[in-house]
Length: 295
Length: 226
Image (cartoon, rainbow over all chains, first blue to last red; front, side, top):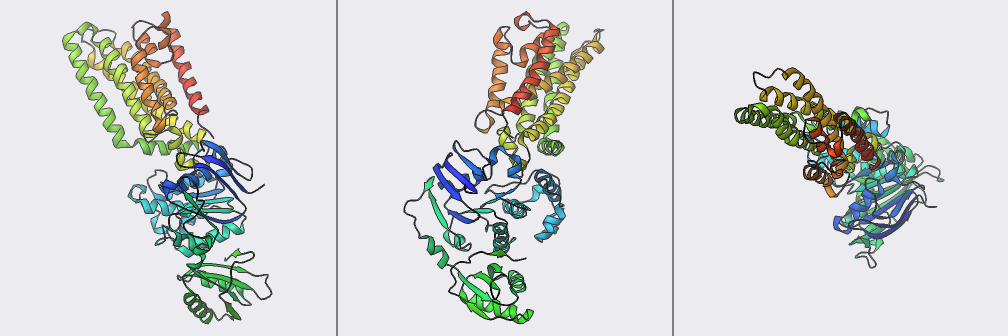
């Protein structure tokens, strides 16, 4: 049995979509009118499919609150529950999730402490989505992340922060489904891509899945201190994603950035600053056998 | 979670909205009561209660309150902001309906009291008894209408069943046939002295209202998935 099983799901837009996923990242490209947002809502248990079924580890999320507590989801029109302040609104969502952390801790981990005292009414759509993304990425041990346009809040929650959290979720055996309208965004995740077109999987996608990968450069760096290098690189604003494998003969760090020059410059800058030894940089790397999120 | 749902419902109703609805309803009751007292002093209290208070004011105020709590959509959709994070939708719905009941019962009681006080004549010796009875009845009407509209909110796109519930209450609630049995209006009219539904006594009508209120509430929760 697969972790996520979607069988002949129909909705206002979707027309009998099937999908099976094991833990890992999976990108769905398409617009709202193609059904990507319906798919995300149905996967997250916010909406029941008209026909068909969605199960995560054998459980239907729509009818199971306990399962929904382990799903992090962002919708396009996400709104926080009404409350006088952002902190109180987030506290309500944490209580719903059974999460013992405080809203201050969650906001602090995304450097959004200054928002705590703001009125929920003063938030614009992007800020609502940003906080919803923050809540989705902070699910303690997720089984599913269902994210609509996860990079849309990039000025506030950076792309590398999102990709980091996604890598961490995958390391926790979660399935991560990202719905995106444009291919370059999908490329940032270096994950398998499928295209939804008018409610069905496109038989002839407008792009090959490998096209997405070519839009970003990736490299594997061999070092004796992979954890420290990965941690330092994760703080670099030019790095899109970073993960590491400590059990390799000589620890390996996997880095994704806009192009190979950016990777090289960031690695040399970080290595010099942190005094970390670098043995090699290999830009011919295709995909890590098993990656683990950086701390 | 029930308490948090209640807080969310309170925020949705909003103090300004509550004040506007209450003031408009109170002003309407005062105007109609003054008119009734001027035109037919002997039946002014009955006409005011049967017409503007229980016929229009309480149903419309409750309709507005339930609409506001459900964000003018389906009850299921209105629970999404918290259900998405793992809250049980039935518990949320119960919290929403509880707050709606408290608000609409308070408005119902206040409007009924205002109707009696504004419409009674100086020579009326039963004003205190009428005021107490009508206030209790207004409280009960608020509860039953809230449960009735909450049940309506579980049907149709964007909760349009709520409007159907209001229309049904107006269309068939004034009759005395079996069709009027499941809607609140017929029993409330019976308690106010109008013709009873299926020859029911006032005691039976009171019990029917309480029973139907809880049945509507249970059906609402049953139709809301966890």
